[in-house]
Image 1 (tube, rainbow, N blue to C red):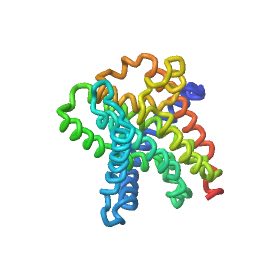
Image 2 (image 1 turned 90 degrees about the horizontal axis):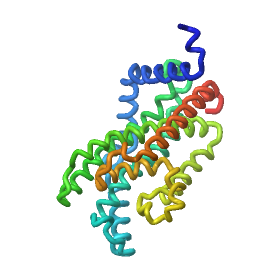
Image 3 (image 1 turned 120 degrees about the vertical axis):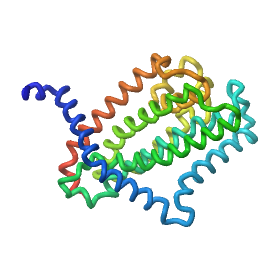
Image 4 (image 1 turned 90 degrees about the vertical axis):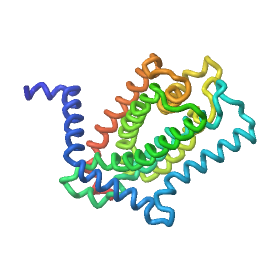
Length: 278
């Protein structure tokens, strides 16, 4: 059976299985680094972990105030605009925040680069999990908001873990690319932040995709973040199952798998040179 693994697709599958086994083997290290990352990010300040929630909540309030009272945006499909807005902002905060912080994961933990017992490809996971902890708490805030508006969770909300999983897989592939490239070209980090800022306005987070003429909507749908943002709204507001998006779901996973595979290969190829540039 040894020669079978020489086939590129099967070898790739084997490497992925080994990677997930390494995650299980290194779960204690991942948990320790995640706890340390959260403490380093928030617990050194007076308000501590509250800043993780205050910053996105203030952003949500400001945007809600501007769009609701400044621009006087009407309700979306007779749904309160504040709920429609928060349903799109919460997944975007998770995606953008994790992408930016995980880009610098290897740089931040550079002291582990020369440790041959540590699989460096788990480092972006530490940043993603740190962002995920805050994201889960923010989802609970969304539950409270929707319940206060007499729109409590229903069966469609069971899709939320699926869209969180989609986000994590996409982020892992992207951050393998960015966290390895930034070691050789430091401008990559700044480029990621610019792309995230641009992506916020190119993704229908604060505007409805239906505002785009139908003949151009396919361009907007090329953005994989749209699948996640609209997926949250499908679950929370529109009551649509993800498999009913018969065009977007296959496209998203095709794109994500390609990015995931490319990121894994690029990270592995560049890994031997990390110590030379740090």
